[in-house]
Length: 125
Ligand code: FES
Image 1 (tube, rainbow, N blue to C red):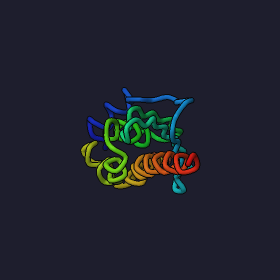
Image 2 (image 1 turned 30 degrees about the vertical axis):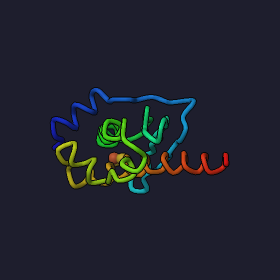
Image 3 (image 1 turned 45 degrees about the vertical axis):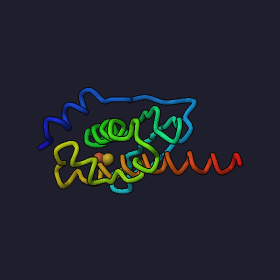
């Protein structure tokens, strides 16, 4: 039911862990299943220099978190904001329809982390 890429990211998640000195943190919950995801970003020169995630969720949530960290790393904030829920699922070769809501968490978490960073920057002014 899962593609090989999903299983691979689930078995070897990239960029898993916390980032105590993050420049932005996005926390999102999934109302469908109650799962929770944190995305941490470090920003340098308007680019995502580093990104980590901590996810309490199903296998698909872990695989999509891992995938979004790979998609977002090195991108400008504008590019990263354009990564959609669909992009994440596509990059994993698709997700079973019943698991599509899980990929929403990753994209929403990334966007929330960027918004948090922009808000903090605004507050510094
Ligand atoms: Fe909760 Fe997948 S079932 S995120």
